[in-house]
Image (cartoon, one colour):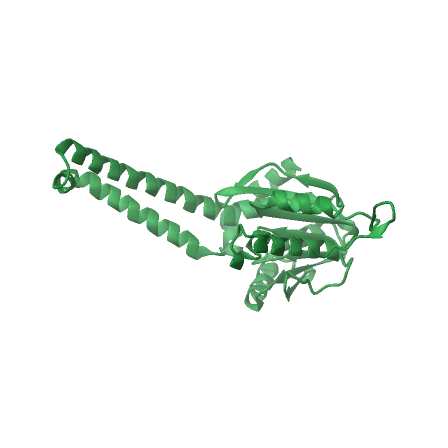
Length: 293
């Protein structure tokens, strides 16, 4: 799978990906870049006007302490600008080239796409993962379709445009809906995927609160609910992957696999894949499991 992923990413430059999908949360990137430039300018000013800065500090410090304070302040500003530039670069890389590469890896987690008739992308955004799934369906000659679910109608329209640019519009459907209560029946999809979305659910409560964790688990339960018996689920997300693994184990999912750590958006991320068991029973009395949280 690794060689296929490498070939896919090298055959397509990030400029092509960015030209089609643009970038979500560009405000964050601009915030980082503006502050990086500001700190760079301030550090240069500290270097150019080092003696006047020393005199300023000398007004309330000894000469040696003033020179140390001026040098230390300039060094902190320079280091801060480097860190901010690095953060901006990592944010851009994570949002565009890495997102595309991880989408390829997620698609590779499903063994046979030719048998897939229905797939779902939860929190599809502008459609990098959604269109990667559609492209895979097209390559394998499948008659399947993939549904992209998002909360915003505006985003859905943007996603349909990117599908058209990728030449997979006939494989893609977009729909608005609440991820906490997916508008689909039980056992509906052969494959369900989601990329860097689950961690945003419940953020209104704060990322580390019990309420936010409960909301994330609720979405994971919905993901399992709409999967067909024997269906495959694949999630790429940040920070909370251990929670997902524990919940999937509680739900008796099979073939739970966690990828190696990948740094995305300056934090740890992993891909988790699993298969819903063909039999929905657990325990000696064969009590039917409730996938809902």
